[in-house]
Length: 487
Image (cartoon, rainbow, N blue to C red; front, side, top):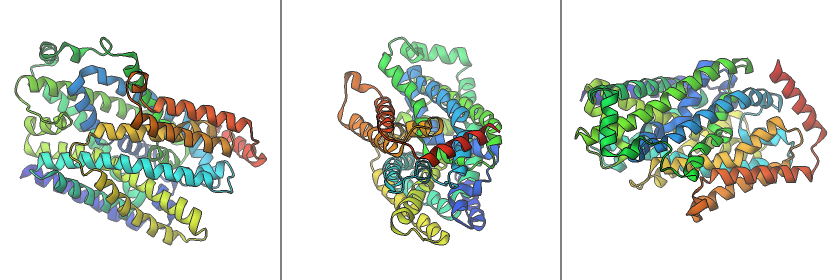
């Protein structure tokens, strides 16, 4: 009961923030970008929390629990990718989106950056966002259902709907402001959980050396990061880092910073949080495996290892806080994905294609309705309890990384890229991920689909750009944004 009460208090607090965000949301920029008022701490933890999702506390510990340290290459790749994203993309994207007609969404930026009067680029990028984010959101819904069903004796379906209703409510109400502040609080909770629980588990097992001995006696391969791991497997896991350059929900945090001068401080906070969190998840998976070998844990689904450790090792009130941290990881990503998806519907479809003169109030309403509709579709996709959180995340992550990543980088660093190059590259990246991920398997095709998708995107974007001419105003704007970023 104490666990349930703690959990309910947490949920009530998140909804209260949604109501406050509702009162602070006055226009479209407020709803989708927070009026560009995010401080470095909120931006950093919000970006990290929306990035990591339920897979950090469910998927990654579950992968380490099942396969050992060979799964830790994902953590290495993500750490490198996140640092490079903050180092090279954050400042330039913040300044360029402001210079380029104050763009408030990624499709909006692409259209303004390439002066695309046909609106094809906006439409293609909006379709990519809706397709992959619906799958990404379904992964979060799956994680939420597993949390509720295993913690409170609910069925999978009951857990799915309860978690979804809370997330939809505060995203629907508060928009970007509510999402960013809830992500900030959720990021702190996730950080504490990933530091505290592995330490408690290792202490319970008799210390670090005893934990390693228990793991080694049960499965020597669990402690091997390189031996027995193929080159393709290592490259695939490291390639997760490529995905950062194209994730709209993370890029939106860069765009929402109050100033490009806040990037350095935000980068330090964000990367510190992320590295400690990732390796906390790795240690949690290892400790959970050791606990299963001594009979302390009995799991049917490895992705529930963090949930079961929380319940077995801690006081009910603390368990409630730790379970709230898991829900935080889930909610912090879903809310961001719903917000970006709803912005694609309102700003890029509704206004961009059907009603060019739509008012801000009208677009916010459309955005809120879109949140509910997209969430329901994601819930239906998440209805299968055998879904793997990590597999769903992996597919959507690759889709965004391959479709948007190269175009974001080329847009910010290559003056010569054109609209035709961006369209060709984006389509190539998205289609490659879909075909490679669904229809090709075995041998070299076991390579994570983000790699061929990313490479093909770059090649076609460059080739098509070289066969077309950039508009003079594009080059002028590029120089203005570059100079502003250097100030």
